[in-house]
Image (tube, rainbow, N blue to C red):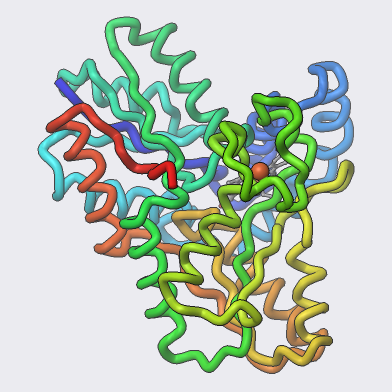
Length: 347
Ligand SMILES: C=CC1=C(C)c2cc3[nH]c(cc4nc(cc5[nH]c(cc1n2)c(C)c5CCC(=O)O)C(CCC(=O)O)=C4C)c(C)c3C=C
Ligand SMILES: [Fe+2]
Ligand SMILES: [Fe+2]
């Protein structure tokens, strides 16, 4: 019997240093997130980052926490519950990190008789620190605990026309009551090194866009290429003028260079260039979370207004919006019917 496993990133159990610390430990000790040799990763994460970050992160989480829990978890659950109403297949939700594990979601599916699983990483774009680590962990757990199950993965859907339509319409709705002079597409950043590591050709990706018009297998795993494709397709769908749209990368950790331009620097640059009314959208995330609700909606607003901006709006992620649920339902039901997953057109 077929079933669907949705996987998102995860959150700590509560916005306290006691719960944030083990969550960050699991997250940052993932070799696909901090990709240093284990001994160095242990020093960096346990010896340095976890000494101070849990307190700081817990304070940030406390600012956005809801009565029902972490926004990312609550919104992912709402999405899952709605999806269940649009498919006959069992659907389960797991998280890559934290206590809502992938193993228990697979167990839930198994208990319902599922042995043929469609894995849906809840990320539109491929990065080794998001999409890839989910796939690797699911396959590890499947082989270890559920060897009778088979797993098929829905590819990154960053340029699927139905996804672009649902995203664009949600942005249009968010912009209805907001008179903007610029829209910033702020994507979660990753270290530039990760782009090179994910390039199967070892030479294609130049990390400046000059390679993106040359057809290459590298684009299947290039986060940078994929996010710029999303921006371009939304821009085309909404008919936005070139000069009113730009893309940037947020949430970097200290250390090696991360993808540029950096969102916080862009807030300053745009304000200094005379853009006074800024709308920010965050399409790397399908659900609002710490990185959108605190870093963009709160901190970002402060940064932009301090730099001379006058009006600012974060447009929410698609969360459990009906059109988005219906797009996902179309993909999973098509897979149930035909076994096909035609979500990423090659053009
Ligand atoms: C869009 C997908 C994501 C990618 C790619 C990604 C890469 C990445 N993240 C970190 C470090 C942190 N990220 C944190 C929070 C966080 N990251 C994502 C998504 C991606 N991360 C989400 C959805 C969230 C929010 C989780 C929530 O509970 O709401 C955090 C924790 C919070 C903090 O302390 O700021 C860290 C740390 C790295 C190092 C990385 C790529 C190398
Ligand atoms: Fe992150
Ligand atoms: Fe490229």
